[in-house]
Length: 267
Length: 329
Image (tube, each protein chain N blue to C red):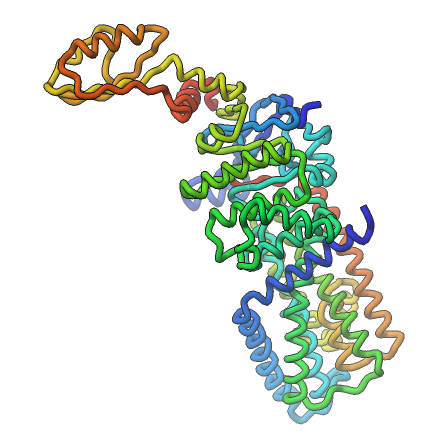
């Protein structure tokens, strides 16, 4: 079998998932409205927080609002895989996916990214429009920033999907695993989504640097709102890629161990 | 070489017991209790290439668990399974290229997309060249009469239309063995007839080995040449359909209706149902001669109607379920 045909299945899976996502425009618009509302509310919160101050932890108000707009794109676009994945594993439905000639992790990833690509395209367009209205002009940065942000968003989404899959796969052992996701969500929120990591106390920032959480929202948002320089940008994306690789290996290992424990409801 | 070989296959599920009451629930957090359920308890059989076999059994008999072990979805507890010379649990991906599977309770079609999209995706999954896929798809669409549904979202199709698309989709990669788990479940009579006709055609035209589990005796009567009956996780009958039907020859169902009330007092023959003027009997022809029974019934009074019927396949199978050994411990 040619490599082209092997790779094609993942591309077609992503495209089918994109088409599936656009089947209900109402659902897409509802999610877009939630995102817009969230951005609007927090832009007001930050405006109040910056009253009488030019900057906090190196970020000006305009940069902060843009940071939040970009940080929420992976949070909204890639943040909701866990429930479906965990439920499929608990009910045994995932077993049916294993009887086909594809890699389980890769195929699920392709489908997840297909769906998220549609969502993220809408959030990017909406985010830019909201940012121009609520924050003003886009913060300055080099021409290659757009490509770097898009690459960083893709890496952030990949890590988010893989971490959620890894957490969902704990259902092979734990009957109730939503607590793991709850902890993950809260850490993700504090470390880089609601606040840039520069806002954290020094000790917490040092610890956070050794976790994947800054790679989830902080990296693309920082690159967009406060370009850290070419070298630091490369380091941020490199760290994301390293975490993505670790997450892939973790998922493969958990799946290999967990598959033997698969039972299917109703036989 | 047999297409399917199953040797002493077992599967036991371990499920957590949830006792009643808050105290018991709290105790179960510290010391959880588990119950083992033996779904399959040493099943053995062989299926030759090109055979069309019915795998029957009541609910919870172990049919679906066996088919899931044969398709690589579940790992057996012990024993050996081989499909086309491959071990389903260890060589799952290689096997997946040569088998097709339709699970009546699990769709392989995307619910919000038209079947054409799912066909395209399945073609890619099985690594079929797009040009070959287009030809294969066109052939199946024509054979299965699904051209009108190919661009309609699956959610808008009737169950019968969906099942036809499901079966067509499972044949895209020309599987050598086709597993069908309850393919007619939930279908009305017309749709069932259509699906049975398609299965017969697959068997005769595609020369594929077909392994069907079903509750519906009509499915197997018209499509299959051999029946394997499983009950409480063990094989209780494995014989050609012809022989299974022959079991009916020793049992006759007789119905009689008289013009006036009669006394149904015939030595050795009690009616299974009766009114003052009518009755029905089940006659074991190895014990009683049919001719003598009929003569006795004719002699009881003025007959208005008399029917003699063979036992239906459904009744034969129900009887087998009822008398099967190996009840759960």
